[in-house]
Length: 201
Image (cartoon, rainbow, N blue to C red; front, side):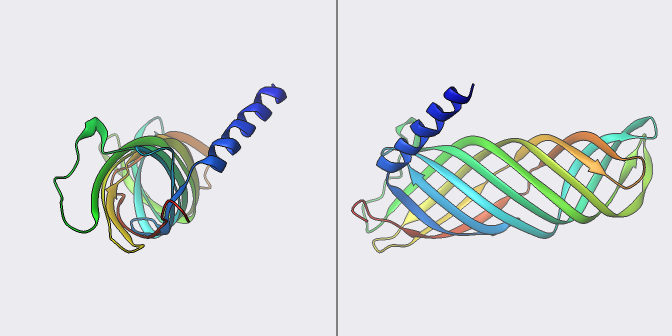
């Protein structure tokens, strides 16, 4: 098992060594943070992000007093995500003949995060669930991405994308320990502002 892990790490390192960096910068939206794109050939890239939501909210289904509760969890949440993206998939490119380049992309990947000093409210069995504070919770799941970007003729890239996530999580309201549940977040639309590398950088 260790040998397989070492081989996988070595293969990934070799891929990164030969691939060209694409762009690095910030992602401004539901989760504000840093964003890095790494090219894997001309039509694929990996996008990695680390972001913080100061007072956003996410949806969480969990068990509550013998029934299913739909809670909205708000507060500080730190999230990391990566997706493997296809650039101009299906060979569908923007008809653009001026300076700069337009591209669209779509991808799949994973995301995970942790929230603290959070609060929640919601319903269980059609009845309102009491407002709770000082919560901790975490999640991990699948992520998708659809976006469009414009590469200027100088080293600047602007993009806008939508990256929903769906997965499982643990929700700790301080009453009886952590509870497992289903997590989703569909409001992660963000603007990207990045420094774009040239092929010879």
